[in-house]
Amino acid sequence: MMLESHLLLSKAGGATTQEAIAAKCPMIINQVVPGQEEGNARLIAETNQVRSRVRPRRSSAGVRRAMADDLRVWNEWSANISRLSRPRASLEIAELLLGL
Image 1 (cartoon, rainbow, N blue to C red):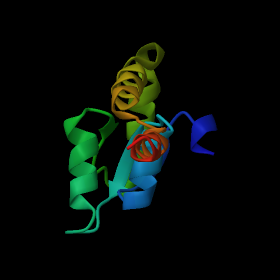
Image 2: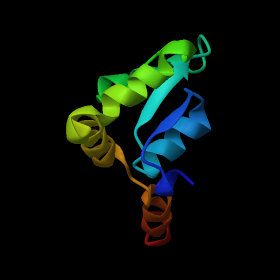
Image 3: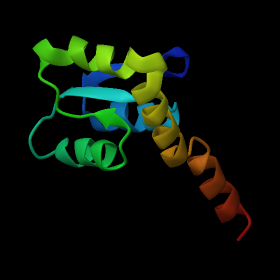
């Protein structure tokens, strides 16, 4: 479903964050569980793929911001997450190991 989506509004769960990266789907993070999800939120925020740690009640403002000005912010987030995405990484690792 993320491959067909323009934007994900979610908490910074590990599997969800990694799937969003693989699907090149920018995120708006509306919740971070202290400790276990802080690294995920930091990765997304530091690579400028998302608006991070938006309060749930303000999530709609983040969506409006991403979609404003002919999708200027969304296009930036999309380009940044695309550079980080490696959806074939596990297959490439397996191929490398099989070639040893």
